[in-house]
Image 1 (tube, rainbow, N blue to C red):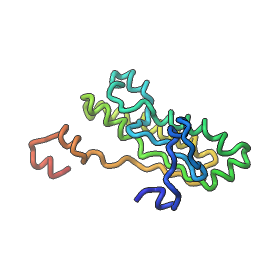
Image 2: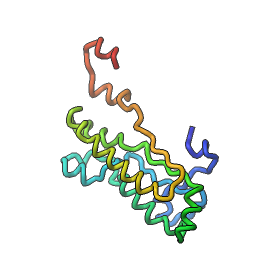
Image 3: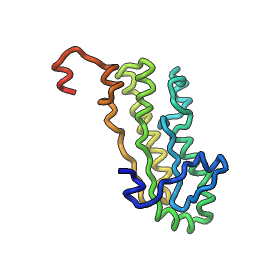
Length: 167
């Protein structure tokens, strides 16, 4: 079920549509999500020579920047913001999966990708801490079980049947 349906609010307008001059009612919030986004910045991946495998340059920090840019139009004073955000729901993620997908699809090994875990956790934690200022309801879901997706099962094929049954 979609989060908006559970909380009985309308589907939220996408932030990027607001910047394109389209007019939406933002009384219930704004959607900053970008398909294919990563928790880590594009620069992080470029420094490791896998920036070309990214599906978008709009990372979690970009989305947080959009929120900070929009915030003054939602409320002006600390008191107004306190009232506004007490009624708000913040949903961060599911994000982080593409931070692992891009390296895997660029040929990285499991050992190499495991090194990224602390960086991804730190990026999600920093964004969460930035949003926690004033937020009352904040949801930070974990990653989906992407290891069972067809792409991963194909990449990490193993002819050993006993290994396959343990997956």
